[in-house]
Length: 171
Image 1: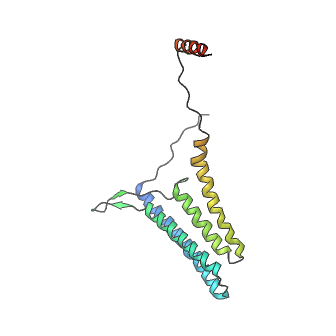
Image 2 (image 1 turned 180 degrees about the horizontal axis):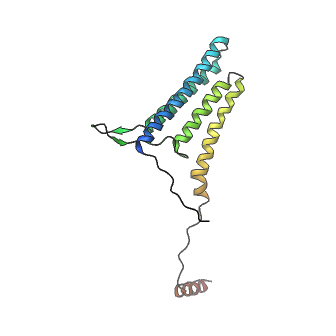
Image 3 (image 1 turned 180 degrees about the vertical axis):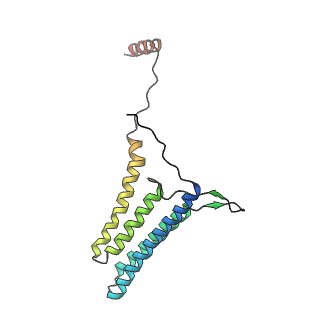
């Protein structure tokens, strides 16, 4: 039985713009939801500490930076007549930088809500730098360190004999 090789379907520019809007909306709602849950529970039970304030400010910076970065790279450009010129980067592309930023938002909002149970859940955020280090190692450093040595061009037999004679004279 013969198998057909099919080409992966490509998205149109308008579809990318619409999916980017949906993705941005989803992650904005995730951020607002996590912040809303955290501050509502914190205000009701008044367990406000310096640690929770400091880490909430830090997480707020992470939320704003991540969301604004995704919004920036997904920004579509239009002509004066309203025609779509550039759809921006596809936020739903697997393995892209947006994928890592989305993971960061998910981790941050999860840690933020889980920290209501115990302050030890703040430590889960240490997974972010570990993941970043893993990505840097896997994508940049390891291929560079373990790259095969460039092959020496083969010498002709004549040059090889000449080199061997020189080496023999030196010793």
